[in-house]
Image (cartoon, rainbow, N blue to C red; front, side):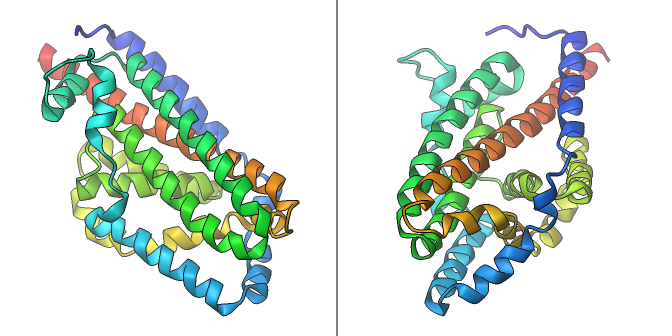
Length: 275
């Protein structure tokens, strides 16, 4: 595979991503009060359901520490970048992604995966919407799990390894970005800038400690949306639409933020070659 991007092309694409980042700072009014309906939801939800949600969140937290059950099969994703029957190993394919695979090809595979996971989340939301508040206890952790999965797949598309703890921090930041307000989005983008500069390792421990806060923020952001899903039967429609929207937002954020990172890395490669 040959490298096809020029420096000018990469800089233009970077400008497009920066324009997208600015658009994300327009906050929907109801998101500002998203915590209020969840305060009500907590009061209405039986304790055994709250305990179940809490347990699932703890299990998701273990993903950050060890990878746990949420790590995806990287070979399935990486083989999408080589001809059928190729004997390249996962590490060799990753080298190709770092150095030669066009970013347009990475975008294509990431888009395909995002669409696939969005369809799965839509079906999941419709299924759990049947039972209202009781199946909502299942829907929240499952949607979080699907979100982690698609972000890992997207990280692989752009040549990064979700088995690395620092990479899982980046994934959590992408997840957090989709549910944050204007101030939060700005702070997260500043945090992610350290990944472009290669200075993130010193912050890993402190950022791991904030995992529960990240999940709580993500859960609370459902607010009004999930409140509508509490109604049995009608929740089928709300559940499908809510999960579709949520997963689509996560996949888009992952693609744009990883795309930005890969462009930065490729520009650095070109600069080092010129030197």
